[in-house]
Length: 508
Ligand SMILES: Nc1ncnc2c1ncn2[C@@H]1O[C@H](COP(=O)(O)OP(=O)(O)OP(=O)(O)O)[C@@H](O)[C@H]1O
Ligand SMILES: [Mg+2]
Image 1 (tube, protein in one colour):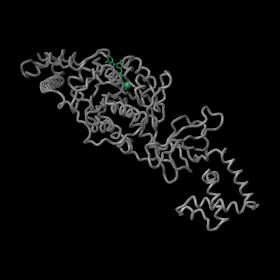
Image 2 (cartoon, rainbow, N blue to C red):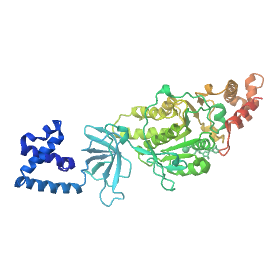
Image 3 (cartoon, rainbow, N blue to C red):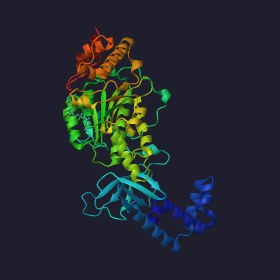
Image 4 (cartoon, rainbow, N blue to C red):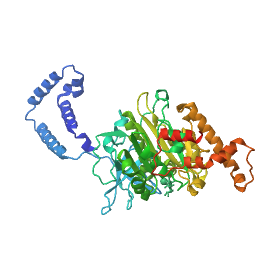
């Protein structure tokens, strides 16, 4: 603390203190009140001239001069705290006053692979801070020093919040949760950065959804039409074709920019997704943020927020963005890991209440911006455990999204790709963005499909004889064509207009 006083300002304060002691009425605070600062200076100089030659003053002056030169080379005082507990995923530190979300560095013993570990403040209790490491922490010692990395100025909290690179330079790039390139193509060269959180958009300022977004998938374009600014869920168990479907959309959509967040999936899948599913053309107009399952839950959550920040940047530039997040469930799981580690009680299926608050906060950032601006159409994949649609995350996601596409395992097993279960899927804005003729055809298609599915067993064993149900008769006749209409190879493009034309053809 001593060092802190002996700054340049502190030095003059000491000098003034000295003047006050020597001249009584010429006190510094009186001078501050005095209208004439010049007058004070003149009197001080006169006073100092009077006492020139006073050995005490001279010796003080020498001492202060020596301190002044030492101060010039002294390192600024760095506040630090100490690590007091490391149990499970969370670390505890005392001696620091830092806001939730700020970052710090923890010293590791000499000889460690990395000199310091990084961590983020995820909560506090009294004067104890809860930290969640974002890097490797092997070898951490009790009492290790904890240094804050940066602190937000009080008057502008957003200025100190973590900011990550955004910008057009990032198209075609693959980055990690902290915006560091993973593709080995050198620095990003991004000139703009953005905070990870965004102010809430006034719901009355959002432009309503009234235009169709072509996603390049026939079954979706025609029967589950998606609007610009709509937020959809892609619900499926594992291995049913979520990633392939997202990749198909990324390649063939009419959106101008695609932002892809790969959150908490297997590391191997990241490369596979980029090289085989997305391909070179898809990547050229995309930004990929990857935070696989083995990174800290803090970084997995950050990657989801960063993906959204990137999409927001392009939307604010007036672009129509398609954001694909794989997966929302892993985001919820990361928040569950953090919340349980800092002692939040579990509620539904082990998910603490904060998870259900974080989901809408993330999802509400996407959608349309103000009138006349860009849009973010988002697809979030939601894992349904063992194809259980009642999973709490699936339930919560269904409530906050503007529609859901359910992938069906038995369709996938039968080689019917994309394995979209038309009956269970719904696009909630569809009725207001398509014309009446289109809507009528969709209704008829769904009726016939559902009638056929319900009677499938009877038809297959030959227990149904035609003539009893007109609609079913028609469905039986059309079923093979309906089935092939719904299927699409993953290298096959199906733009909006041709998809509708094909739907019309079915009924002519
Ligand atoms: N349109 C398609 N055409 C042909 N095969 C497909 C198609 N979609 C998916 N598949 C097959 O299904 C497999 C699994 O697909 P995908 O990796 O997309 O599943 P997933 O739901 O993302 O799985 P996970 O939950 O493991 O991430 C693919 O490897 C591929 O063999
Ligand atoms: Mg996948």
